[in-house]
Length: 395
Image 1 (spheres, rainbow, N blue to C red):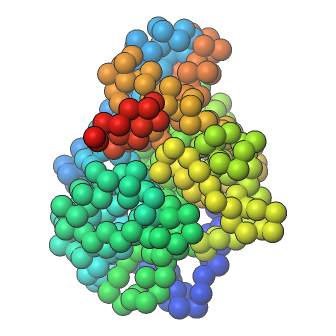
Image 2: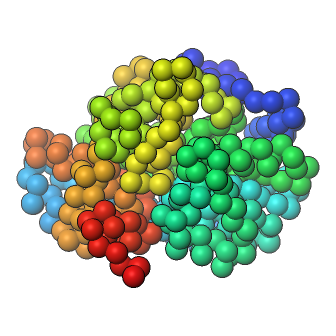
């Protein structure tokens, strides 16, 4: 990262003056607390004792034998408390907000996992919590809406635009500008204005730190390939970060192609996007012919975002990471495959990475190691996948 939150040409702080003091206050607080032994001790205790870290690096023996080729490991972020990687970032941010004297947290959510994690941490740390979620996503992820309310959060369905994640982010930013003094915005992905992409990446980097240690312990060497799904990109940057300097480790982000990158119903930003400015940052975004943010689509509510975090845009620009587009159909097949092969039901987001691994592993030699980040578990997606397959399990 270069100065003031720039990753090459990407990043920056494209925000209204009304938010400037809030992000400056956040940056100063983070820069202080990230080196504070007491803060780090508290956060480590929360991650280990409450969230259940370190998460397992599991050898997927049946999948490895079935596909032939590379030895496949699964980084089990689905085993974290609340069922996804989101808790890593949320515990860090809510603890930071508490140290800053805030009493209320707000968050956006797509698939609901970030909203559930934020509501969980707010309940634990005795904070007020309000979550904004696209109305379309509240229908797709009704179980998570119930969980958030059960945890004491207020959930507001957002009806503007496409009523999905992008609109939830916009609404949460608007809400933040109206009440900065006692409120912290717990942003859920490595996006938005500086310092959010850096703070969130650093909280998620525990994933790659653990993968590295666990792989060296199990195999005596680093993996050849690390794969993760990418929407905004927090689980992926978390899985990639400590490998960026290890040039022999291939980093692959798997985007949501929806019904195909040759259609308008896609959310594959690297494959179809152009440089733009939105939600406080410069990065790549899916845009229409007039340069307006395009409506995007994916079966996955968590990948249904028209942009990508600035650090991913930079890793793409310099060729350090490769980004591939995975269709709904490929992801659903991978969701079913991992479920019946290993007895692990992945989030439909994570299934995008599993899909590409299924294609890649057979082409790799047997001595090579591949790690797939299973960013979350798939309970929340079962009804949506059943519907996709023509079965209504909510009848």
